[in-house]
Length: 477
Image (cartoon, rainbow, N blue to C red; front, side, top):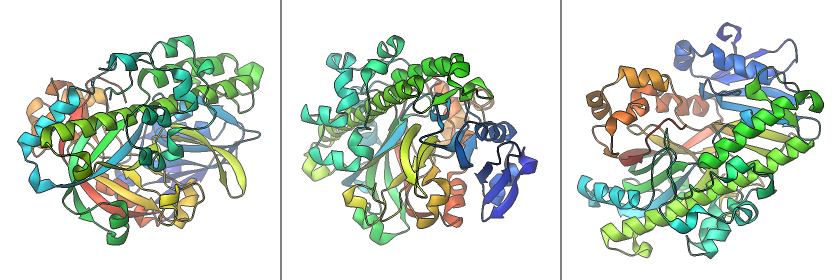
């Protein structure tokens, strides 16, 4: 499949599916293209281009790697009236996403000992690891109807966060249309994981702003060189996984009835306005809002931990929410004057300046797109430029794996992991359980980010460097 890709513009390679006439675009730098060995990921984009109502192009981001159905780093848009929705093209962890907190803390003020104490204080409040339930008993049986219909505002009203946080979350932390009644019973039973980060590539990171590319925008965002930040990366946990699993099965079993046969089970789909399609979108929105609430609750406990350890009030520390953006989501959006259902799987929305769907505070800059790296490497904050419409206003969501989890666990030792993360405090009970998250198991984040920068789609604002990280253990991406 790689052989079919031909350069069409800077860092963009493409070919056309002869069956559907839909174009497939993959964004890779020359270096990433040379090393690219993910033929299966390209084949997954090809399969996606065969689905009913798919709109050209189907896109692979620079962090593309093989996933379930659609590759991670995949973007697929379908016609909202005549197209389909695919649970697998959204992903297992619905609204796996990331939020960034800025602070007024100079990185020179917190040494490794303080970072370790802050991470310990966070971990005592926020369980990590696959299958872990909320540390707060009351959060283990949340009002799922309120989560689905009110979202983050429900918990802000209850004292978990600030009212101004709502203005800096995609869709104010509540994607419309959520309905807990559409959530299958098995998924409802896994809704006990609010205020947890899970496993896999999920984390809470403390770091410093290492480099400023755009001084004016950085200052608008409250990002200043050598000041401390906090990244929170997690999603809808078991609830989202179960919804994807159950609806992928339902869509596959009903494909003949719905007239929406997919080439593979991982892309099982249903017409947007079919009973299955509508039920999935209601359940997906519920899980997405659960994920927003999850990150909001974690933010509350992170703020508590900083206050406890540094013995200063929140008003002095800052800990202000910059933005919270979803990955793994399907959203109704207008592109080119046409309503589409844009599936982003391991991809981040990046609306440019002037776009009407930006929060009011970011209308003239474009909202921050937050791109986390691995636990030993840099992350980035960037904004979309006008040309971002070529990707349905989407960018990569991270660095992307170059090594399977199984291979990383067999190839790296505990000592090699420590060497790759030697300047980072790692809070984990078992370092060997994190070998699959070693930085060298991922692509070079600089190369990945600048693929789209050099293509004229994005502008970097700041580069972030980790100082300490709380990781979840277990295979849950």
